[in-house]
Amino acid sequence: MRRDPPQIPEWPHGTFLQRLGPPVRAALLELGVRRRVPAGQILIHEGLRESHLILIEDGLTKVTAALADGRTALLSLRVGGDLVGEMSALNDQPRSATVTACGPARYSVIPSDRFRAFLKGHPDAALELAAMVSDRLRWSNRRRIDFTSYPVTIRVARVVAELSRTHGRQAAGGVVIDVRLTQSELATICGASETSIQKSLRELRNEALVDTDYRRMTVRDLDGLRTLGRLDDEN
Image: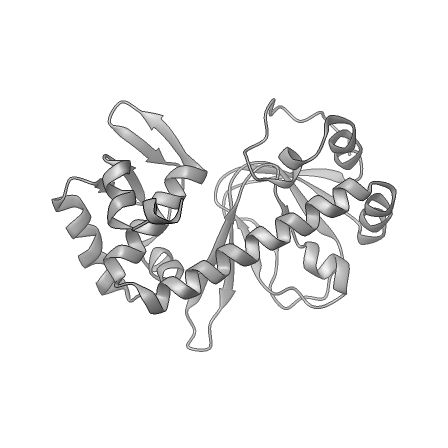
């Protein structure tokens, strides 16, 4: 398949491609075979034994895992510039989660042996990969601490504020979060029941902090939301 050059001039902050210098980034972008998929397409299946990894070049994907009670937990969101599937590519273990395209997406499939050779040839990229994994672990640990330290409304405020930072775009009425999440997905990422999420969102609307529509959210008062989520105390 022809390797069309990516159309994104700047990669989102914190993504793996953004962390790399231009020559190393270009080398990574040449490793894989590009594919395009529509919304809803599964890129990685939880439990499968596969060794390739995926470099998302454009589009939004969600990372989910099956729970023992049959529900699906939303673990994280990944955007253009992010790597997914790197754990199985490096440790030869089954996939720990499912990755699904939330909208049309373009990505590269990179064989594990080529990626390992790339890391050996580019030590700086290996260090950035370690930093990326560390950041993801810190984010996961923060969610676990939130579950035990804060009531649901504060947890929701913290997650929504973080989503506005990582996936928001400024609009006339506030920051529109370009992630279409169901209340069930928001509940799993906040560690709460769907009923509690509905109540918390109602409280945030009543305080004029957010507006919600069908699977869409606009943050009206980001400073107020951060204050409610006690995020100002952490920065």
